[in-house]
Image (tube, rainbow, N blue to C red; front, side, top):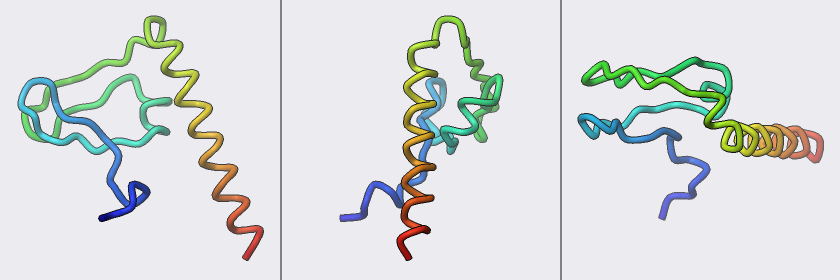
Length: 74
């Protein structure tokens, strides 16, 4: 079984089902993402997604803190 930390983050396109690789940082900063297969433009409505964006920021900060701590302990 592969650890989840090695899995490429992303989502499936709602139109064609192709996997769209993305990162938390991209979701937090980009206005949208594009499917590499069908070119569907997915926009991020920050007002309606405020709660999800707040959670993504917390996850991103926790990930950065974990990376910094693991570098410190080596």
